[in-house]
Image 1 (cartoon, rainbow, N blue to C red):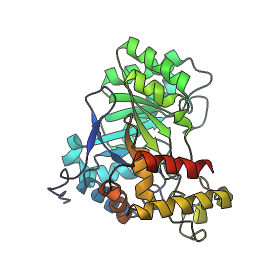
Image 2 (cartoon, helix red, strand yellow):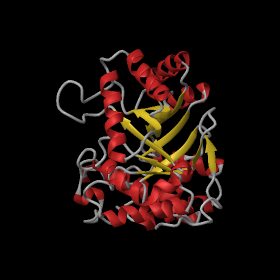
Image 3 (cartoon, rainbow, N blue to C red):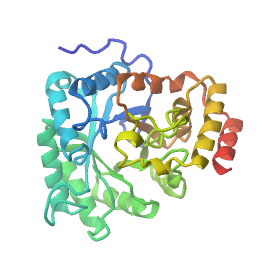
Length: 329
C-alpha cells in the first residue's frame, strides 16, 4: 500500500485560480504522452507518486490522451484503484473532451451530446464519480457557444464536475464564454493554453481577458515539447520525443536558428545556477494570471528537477529583458 510522504506539503507553493476559492500547485502534472501504451505501468506509478510526495496535487488528463485514445484515462483508473482512492480529496483531477474520440457525427467538437457523453465515458475509464475540472478541449466552429457552455453548466449542476474550463480558445471567444457561463451561474474557472518562450500567443489578448475577468490560466507545453531544455543541444537523442515518436515534435522543427537561441538561454540559465528547464518554468510563472504550469515527465527524476525551478529567485527585470532580446534576435 502506497504511503505518501508526510512532508508533501512543506515546499510546494499553491496559488488561487483566478477569483475562485480553488488553489493549484505552481507545477501540475500532465498525463498525456507518457501515460498511454508507450510507458511501462511501473514508471507511470513512480511518476505520480513522486509528484504527489512533493506537493503536486493536480493531475491533468483528456479523453484522447494516449496513445491510443482513452488509454491514459484507462491507466489512470488502475492507478486510482491501487494508490489514489484514499487520497481522492487531496487531489484535483481534470479531464477534457472536444477532439475526435469515436466514429460518427457525435464523437467530436462541442455539442451537448458529445460533451456529456464524453465525460460519462471518461469517468468510467478513470473509475471516478466526478472530476474536479472538466474542460471543453477546443473551440467548435459550428456549434453555438451557448450550447457548449450550457453543457458545461449542466455538467457542474449534475455533480459530475466541480468546476469547468476551456482550452485553446482565442481571446475574443474566451470573453464570450466567460459572459455566457457567468449568466448561467457557473463561472469559468480556468483556461488551459499553450504557452512558452517560443509560443507567446496568449500575450496577444488572452492574458488580458483572463486578468480582467478573474479567470486563472494553466499553461501546457511550457518547455516547448522539450526544446527548452539542454536535450537537443548536441543532436536528437534516440529516446527523445523527436527521435522515436515525432507526431508532436518533428526533427525539422528543431531548426539551427531555434537551437542558437536555446544555447544562449541555456548559458543564461547556467549563470543563474539553474537548468534551462528550470529557468523556463520560472519565466512561465512570472505573470500573476498564470496559476500553474503543466509539466510532463517520462521518469520520476524529471519531476524532481523541475521542482527545483523554485530554488532560484524570480527573474529580474533585466533578466526578462535579456530573454526577450535573445528570443527576438
